[in-house]
Image (cartoon, rainbow, N blue to C red; front, side, top):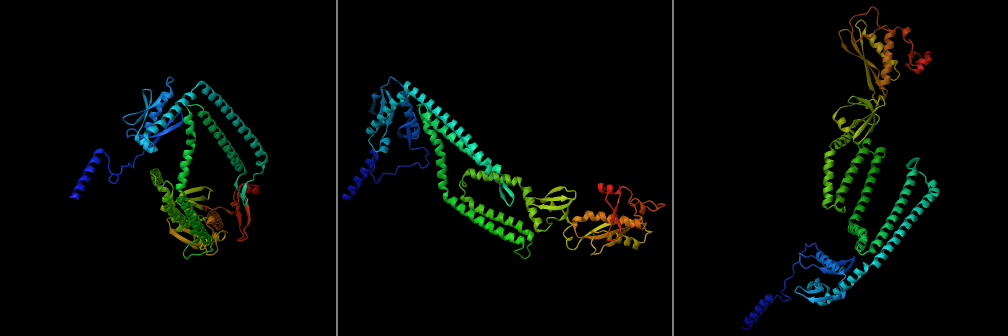
Length: 565
């Protein structure tokens, strides 16, 4: 019975507490907290740049900043009324809280929330706010008095004169310092050289010194402007708040950057360690492949010329792996802007680098396929020249006319390459020329004459021996092909010239004419050059060749003409 009665009493007390809004502490629900609220809880009431007190938001429709602005506007309006006596401010209780009144105008209401946040009673807090408002009104009117404004204007003129004096002093010091540096330092600056190779010019060093000096002076001038402006703005009540904010304009970004750096310090330490490790790996890899290139280290089936491109590939792989590891630790890598920029850069790279990537891949493919080496005489398409540079993207040739031709590696990989130098180093390059001789001339005599012309050619190799081939039995002549070996592919054109000269001389010596391409019939006299006409002007005699005893004609030119005269 007693337990039932106690239960009824408990239920009645609980119902009563719910009705009057007083819940026992043990049963009171925790207040709801808006964890996504972005509005500040407190906001300062500022008048002429001075903070009077802080207030908090009342409801969501009246947040703290808006409430503080309205209170400041009401105080400024009352302060601007010269007929109002600040001593007439009074405190009165209202429906929403304790009101601070200026005559019939209500300046603000002190709520229970304001008092609770300051841990004082509502009446005490209202009295404190009233005194602050009364002092602010007095200061507001004093700052706008003619005497105060005149004094502020005079101080502003003094500040301006001081700023001008500081700027003149900076200009004077700059000129004196420039003259001193020009006289004592400029002449002593020397070029930075390594083994007679100039790395940095002395004038570049001097220009860097002068640029640093001018930058320092500009920073000093800007600092003087900043300080003078802040001091001048603080003298006038209308701009005092702006003067208070000037320093925050400069310090807030620096403070934000400092906090960001401190927050990212562990990640920056990790990145620094990663950079050191990657540099060590790349240096060790470079040392290894340099040894392979120089022949100090040999790898089975690995050409020494592959060392440099292989090192590039390994370096790219190491850097790519390091970039993947470092990406999550880069400050700002998780932000949307960083991801958007990365995506945009990736799209641009993929759209604009297809041909570049194709050329790079082709360059490495040619290297590992041993297509050609530096210095080789090659034919690529219709271009004949010497390989001067095999780059990642292009190959540069120097033609026999001393022209530079730049060919993309992708086009080389898709076409065919004729390399004259590959077998010329060891087995010799076979050069050939073709002549057509009539059927009335014995073929054995023709072969003998062709081999004699080959023997008279100094650039032709004696071993392996030259040889002659009978290509075909044409309608009016027999086509012979003379083949000689050349040990230097770069001497092809000179050897061809000497060989053709000797062929003409030998056939003329033996009275055998070389058939013309448009043969119609046998002429009355053979179409040969008589020996007494071999050196007709402007040709000139060359000294006898000690190898075969025959004289050789000089190439026509200024020296030949002079010698003939």
